[in-house]
Length: 284
Image (cartoon, rainbow, N blue to C red):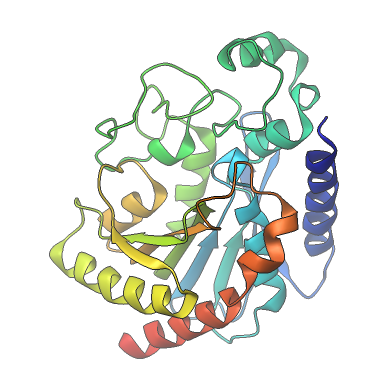
């Protein structure tokens, strides 16, 4: 295993476990991944009223987003209720960081074949079935510019909308709550995407305002989402939930963006999140 990935792997596990063991932080297992790993959501703040949602790790090689979500969880001190889900795709992240040994024996040959017979999974984006979770939601599903119709390391839409257990479990979980704002972290590019074309005029207007404010605080660019369908933010916009997709890290970085970049990437994140949450509460 690549030494840097090995270090990131160990730190990710240690950090994630520390939050599960922290009695001051509530956590929920909202289901299992395809390979049977727990899907965990953490919560801080009040349960009354609308809740905020911060997610990361839906694309395996973008696991830097998981670290950022966990840093936000650690720093969060607002009274507003907020769910933090750092690992939307635990099977994929395990594969990216831990290699083929993290895969159950009966699936190893299939996974290697889907990776063009390479055992280097550092660029893997998909889940354990070779489905890209962020093109699998029921939001203009299958009509994306880069969508693929066969399993692989990236961009495969799945057999049908929300065919993947990770996405089904997530939808069931968050549908119990009224979400004030969803922030979905990815990497890379230092941009904030907003305004899914399938969303209502009202929700597109609101996300435009929020994206501009959030982007200004971060020093990122605010960009209207185009040619992107089937994503978590897209799906939530259709449900009238204001949703922003945040691409972390400068575009000149290479995938996977490792933890050595975390300090620089995390700079201003919490202050910006705090400001946008305050704004949303006052806006509503």
